[in-house]
Length: 322
Ligand code: CP
Image (cartoon, rainbow, N blue to C red; front, side, top):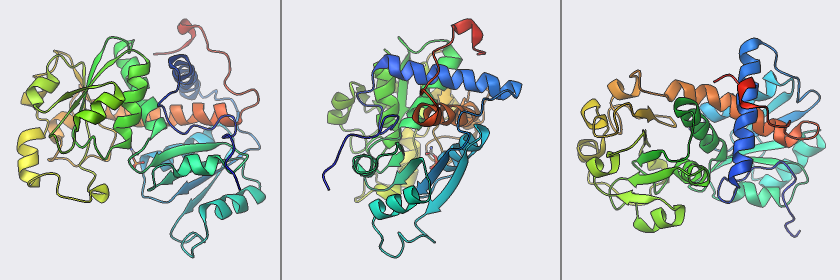
């Protein structure tokens, strides 16, 4: 079977997504967040079933997609590799066709192989939403990161965002950097040369710093990433203690950033390695807001994929609670 175009409403990555389209999703997420707070969420997914196919561990993404589906009046069905026929060798496409035959309207897919959501989207006539594919992209994480930054600063353009740590293996860094660049932010990737290759910075339109003090200087936002050892195929750091000593973000090192800088982490965090608990849990930390915004962003992308007429027209800014 030849690959076709993804069904409308599919979301496979943020690279190449125009700024206005990103803004439209963020505006819808804000509107849904305000309705959620007031208890007036519209049943945009009534009668719709969303399959959450997670062939890799997840807490935040899986639960927030499930929560988002339920909050908008839809039904979520969960499928992991363990306990499903994927474990018996069924192909992902055959699993997707089986889900479709049971009445599933959209598939949310997390997969360890980069490009797998795109390949599936080219073969099924229903929207596919990428929930993280290997080292490639994690578009809803990128969107929730950017929404969180927009809420904290009231804008994205002109901000300097330092992404610190294992960028090489990070799908989050790729999506968040692509979306931030599309909205006019400056991005600097910070870490050792083994984990932050200059070519990756060039590909993402981001600066690169192999020195923590230089990378954090002038940053409005400091986002750390964990070492994604499940994706490492070689020794990228001499030892965990040396990594912590050179690259761990502490309260003293946060002071190298701009006064009032905010801390972010996509999670899961390895406390005491890439960041101390003092920084992770400080008032300047936006981590909890990121998780809450994850539900709002996933409501917005599900509405974009499945609601009658797609996204509702953007509301005037004064109608959106910040
Ligand atoms: N940030 C993120 O993708 O977390 P989970 O792996 O818990 O979904």
